[in-house]
Length: 255
Image (cartoon, rainbow, N blue to C red; front, side, top):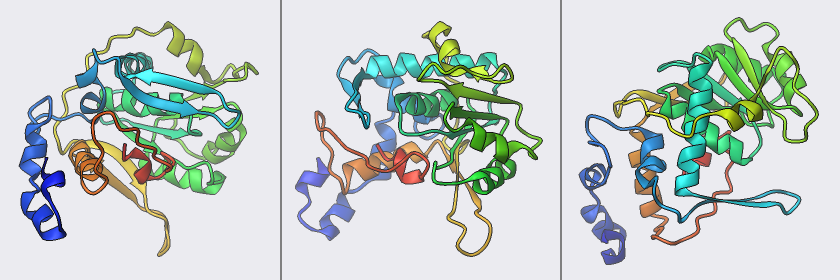
C-alpha cells in the first residue's frame, strides 16, 4: 500500500490518489455514494468485529459488520415508517451508546440528513441547532428528555421525539419509544441511492464569531474518512481503532 511505501511527506503526497479511493467504493464513487452503505452494508455478510462498545459501568457489547448493518437497517425502517424521507433532518442528543451509532447510519440510509448535538450543550445551544437546521425528528434519552423539552418549546419544526429508555423508566405518551420500535423493526432496508454531493451531515461550528453556523457535508465525506484512517492514521485490516471523539462533533464520525 502507498502508506507503507512512503518514507516522507513528499513521497506520500505523490502516491496519494483520490481516484483510487473512489475506485474502492462498492457503488460508483463518482455518481452514487452513501456513507452508511460504504461503512457497513458492503460488509453485510462479514461477521468480523465492527464496533466494540464499553460503558462507564464496564458493560461491554460487540457488534459484527453484519449485525451493525441489520441494526442500522432497523433504525432506517423505524424512521421511514415515521415519515422520514430523503432530505429531512434528523438530530440526536445522545450519549455514546450503540443506539447512537445505529441511528447515524440508519438516518443516512433513508437519505435524510443527520446532525448531532453534543450533550455539553444546554437548552439554548440545542434550540439554536434544531431550529436553524429545521430538524423534524429528534432522538434523545429519557435522562435528557427534560432538557430537550426546554429547548424545543418554541421550535415549530419538530414533529416527533424518539426516546431511548435504557433503564425502563417509561416514555411519555407524546413521545415515541425508540427501543420498542427498534425491537419490532424489519432487519432489511433498501438504502436510498444518494449522490456523492447529496447532503449527509449537518454539523455546527463552535460559534466563536457569532451564532454557530450549520455546515453541510455530502456523502462524499466517506471518501475523506477513508483517506484519514488510511493516511495518516495508517489503520490496517484487523486493527482496533479507538475514536475518543463524541459523535456530537464531526471528528466523532472519523471511524
